[in-house]
Length: 194
Image (cartoon, rainbow, N blue to C red; front, side, top):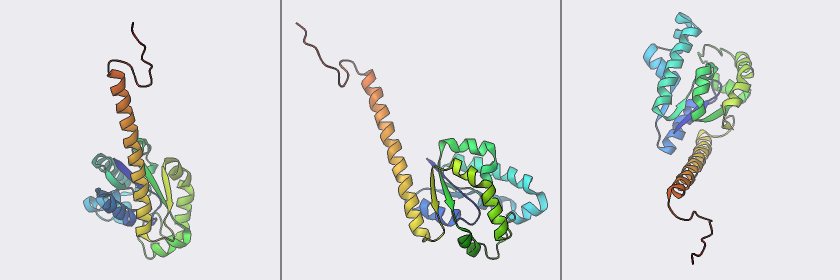
């Protein structure tokens, strides 16, 4: 099972995502961290190669991360890619949101290339809000609660989804078994033969 965490920059995707993975004993991959590990700091990539080159690196990392399963945290703009949007069809998608006030504290002296200040962050969120919402199976606000409490809520939701999928799978397998079994089917009346 692959769970993908999406949302704007500074929503807590990495910090909380790691905690969720630990709670569920799953692997955790942060696509931005993987890009930076292989190619250097993201601001430097934007500066030297430009956003299109970064998005190409990001798309490749998304494909790799999704193939590995577990909990995957996307960079804020990863979902702008239509192929990535299609890839999310088979995943559980969790959207992290945050208020302007909370993000302002988190950004501090951040060197995020597309959000150098809170005004640019708000414009980015406004532009992507509908897309984020359309892709999400579950949305949680990370503004004012402790990271551990948010992680607990997300882990509980994921567990419930997994349990529901397992139940549906068991029901399907039972129906297949019943259909292949000779003799009367469950719920069918048996007539007397004279």
